[in-house]
Image (cartoon, one colour):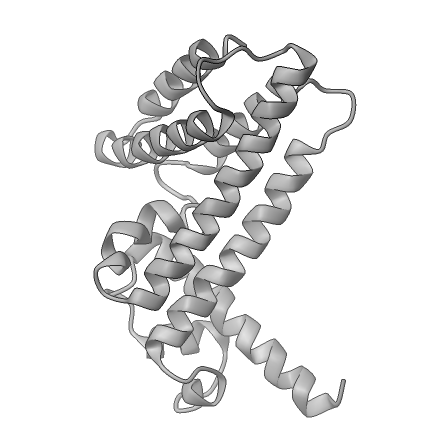
Length: 198
């Protein structure tokens, strides 16, 4: 890769990383591009060299977030020597640990941005939908694996259970922010065990 292209890629990545950290705390609309560029160490005025519009920037932000999130999720769900139930519960435990009430360190972008940007930007809404569908796909496969190995027992289809669990955990994360404690996530953990008979 030529040096100029590598620098351009690095600068773009720096902008996205900085935005992820800031927006996880402040939201999308409350953050100005100058704040993101300053934290990224990228000169003001060069934003549109890397992104065609703020919508394109938001879409790229969510796509890179999901790429990393899904890679982390795949590592958790691929632990050898564990049943489907154990792998699923490890994922939910990881979710609980990264949803710190005071400092989510960029791990809770869906929780922070979903309601806000879904009404503002169709490309960002679609990026959120594609990313969350990919999460649900992985949950569905792991539930199916747990049914096969006998560590999980559910009523209904694995896809419906995967979607219901994800929706419950997303709602619990929002409630944890409202209550400023992790109680809703503890409730979600108990309900998950009950629903999976794990």
